[in-house]
Length: 467
Image 1 (tube, rainbow, N blue to C red):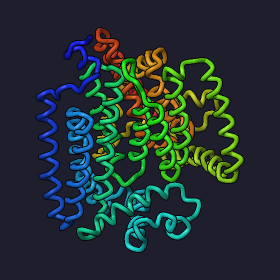
Image 2 (tube, helix red, strand yellow; image 1 turned 135 degrees about the horizontal axis):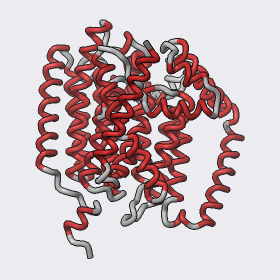
Image 3 (cartoon, rainbow, N blue to C red; image 1 turned 45 degrees about the vertical axis):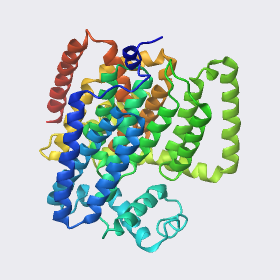
Image 4 (cartoon, helix red, strand yellow; image 1 turned 180 degrees about the vertical axis):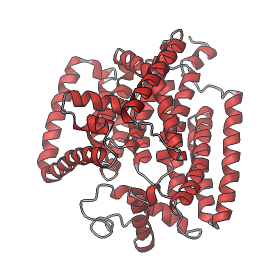
């Protein structure tokens, strides 16, 4: 029988939070409370403070039900994201006159329509959104409804404010970090590395940047992490297949009106998770699962042929649209080479470019410098990512994480190629990189040095070609 210390080492019981982590989580919560209080007073907006307190309290309570460490991880991520939300709000307000990137795009659309819903429709009048507030074909009615519900909450205490959905997204980022930490403990990463993976997934600049705008990507990411978490059992844990199936079906339903392509990805992730279980290891189960999958896919297609065909054409059209955007509007250069090169070489170039995205820009703008720092950080860990992928491929319990990362990465790299979509696979990449990092303790310094030197050479080469 394992001793108490051994049980903690393999993650079968909650570990005690290190004193430094306890102190850090307390400081982030206190600092974020003070800053949000000052911001709420300056904006004369009680709803902002109420949102911060409500989402924070619910997040702290729910994460504490998991274990004390999860609560600390949530507190650090939620506190830091909330402060970043205020900073980005003020920066964009000063730069553009409104607190939105370039003066407003998708996030402003979600807020405008969400406000109309909050003021004109009932809480449960979900059907009233499609065809009335947005076109029938709109692909993210679910997020508009969510923003509308958040604004109904804000109206209880005053008026709507853009910080309310941003703070909600910050809480979702906190739950994403907790989910990554929990997956790491289930897969028996060393406790300190599981904690580090959760904090990295929640505090990387890109993850924070996406979460502190009114965008659906972090909500989608949280749902995807939840699916992977319920299908991850680890070698010494039993997995409840009925519970995992129920959670997966619920998330598929939610994603259909949040980001429909990710609903399909969720089904594939759940399938990989099932085949990774003890039951799924049998060859006959693989055959039956594949056969039933084909039958189910055919049945769904026959029932929803028009909808599926429309969505597929839209998805493929997005790929062409973003190719043209990268070449014509981003400025050509390296983008023109990557996005105009035909396959199969084009696929290789897109993959390499995706690994370095969001591509560092020569700019003095604070938000771009912040994102650049994040890109440089995750580029340093790319060798460990590949090492982790190789290790995960040989360990069945890691297949769900590996499958999620590969599927989401391919979707981003080969189709949409939007920077904010990186947030959907980046948490899983962090887990895999952590696995690679843990398995190569003696080579870490050498790998970092070689990667940094190689990156420096590429940066100089890029600058010489550009100028």
